[in-house]
Image (cartoon, rainbow, N blue to C red; front, top):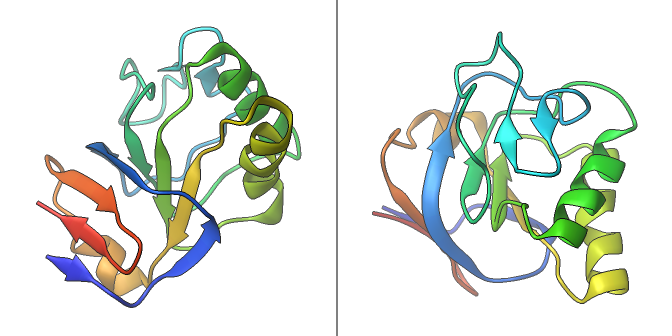
Length: 136
């Protein structure tokens, strides 16, 4: 599948295995920044590791601390390679933007419509190319 209707929130190309969920995720308390492990016991991705993956969640859930958790994950190298969602709250996008400025490492972020998001298969590989999102 080749998606051309998307919005770039944070620049960058990425290609990785996708972790797909229809449940929003709070990074504050929901993800261990030291390991990249999802630790929210109520989330369907609990026990999965975000490191080097493209995280597909519809929304960020939670507090303004998400950007701090994302920044710490970037610092430690436990961050996802990319994030694909329906709506990216500015607080969530702030971590990758600051990570790029501080550590020269960010997290590519894209948003898509709800219809497109719901068509993403659970076990797939996603590439954020320059002019499309490619899903295998």
